[in-house]
Image 1 (spheres, rainbow, N blue to C red):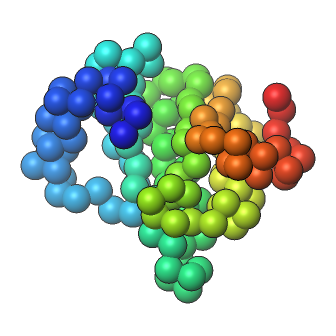
Image 2: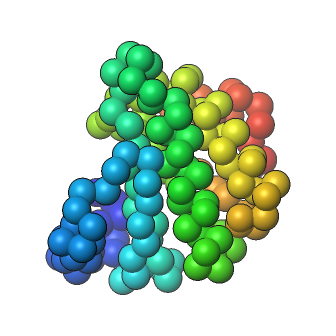
Length: 140
């Protein structure tokens, strides 16, 4: 929601509808790229994270794939830095304590492979921030 508001909701909605017309619904764990519109970023990389169903529906693999797909797409478009929300940890209900290690592993691998030079997390609220910091692997 915040990205849509900042980018220009109507214009971004139109770009998203064009993607759906072209390829259909985006599969969970996959990513696509659009223009950044009114954002300071030149591009927006969209992904679909998994809905948490108790961990029995391949959620960990799908979450990792969502981060990995975004990093790969950034690399293909010569994007050097990327910022992520905590994918699936909001309305999709993925527990932070289970999502953080998956996200960090995917980001670490992508950085080591040179897919991007900088990967940042943009977290919503104090609870989320504290959970990520508690992992002890974050550079502030």
